Structures are given as structure tokens and as C-alpha cells.
Image 1: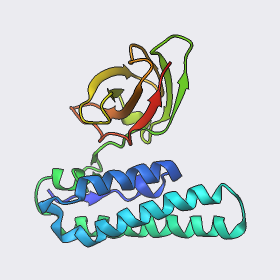
Image 2: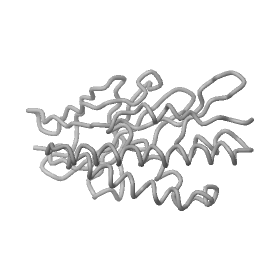
Image 3: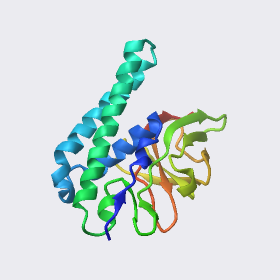
Length: 209
């Protein structure tokens, strides 16, 4: 089946969502033999994502030059994503998973049905609680209508191993039973229907009381 990559899936994303989308694409396409033809573009995407993150942080200080640089960095990032989408459109001849496993959404041109990978939660904020080992997480879902649940994993050995944790059906998660008085890494993923799920978010290090 010939697919069409859905560019609006990333063109309309806000800043944090765009960073998460580009990072997910980079992680899914890096050093994968099926995407070897895109290796140079994926490397550029990684560099542009890092530059955009730096420009976002810099623009918080204000100033026309910094804001202009942020806009230019964002435009360059979207341009490279457009080029990758065009390449996937051009070379796609096999199963739909070849497109969606790269981190892009796609549309079946015959039916208009959206097919694609999910994006992990973004803008994750941790709010300490008064009870030992408890935490409240607030986050944004890039595609709320597609998400049935958000899952959490945590690690106490700097990411060597991960333990399954709490699930939430909304954009707020009440977490209990985390190890207290030690550093803990947490990460989230979006879960949809038909066993669809996103990659993991960037891990966040916390120290709980």
C-alpha cells in the first residue's frame, strides 16, 4: 500500500512537542539498516534539534536577536523533517510500518485513514508531595485523542534497569511507592489502541524525600 506521510503531524506542533517529535524520529532512524539512505539527514536532524533546544533556552532571556535565532532554528528543523517525509514518501513500497516505525504519521490516500506512531508526553513537571515516595506528574499529550493511557517506568540504577510503575488516563499522574531518599529516573510513554505506543520520553532525574 502506498502511503502519504502526514506532514501536519509535526508542522503544527508547539515548541516542546516539536523537540519530542524530532528526538523520537532521530532515535528510531539512527543506525537502522532499513533507513541507511537517510543517515546524513538524520544526523543533521539531531544537530538541528540540539541547536533548537539551545535557542529555546537562550530566547527565554529576551531580545530580538535571540527570538529571531529561535525562529530560524525551528524553521530549519521543520525543513529537515519535511525532507525526511518527502524521502519516505518517495521510497516507500512496502508495509506501512516502514513509515510509522521511523516516527512519522501517515495517511492511506484511498481512505484518508491516519496511520502512525504515537508521540511521548512532553513538558513533564514533577510536583513533590508530603508523603514519602509519592509524586504528582503533569504533562502534555501531543495527540490527546489518540492516547488511552500514559505509562511510567522508574530506575534506581541510572537507567541500567527499569521497573514498571503507574498508569494514568489523563494528563496528571499520581505516583506512589517510589523509592525514597535516593536518586530516581522516571520516563513516560503514550499508549493507544491496537497495541500502539510511543517511544519513551527523555528520562527525568528526581530525588524524593
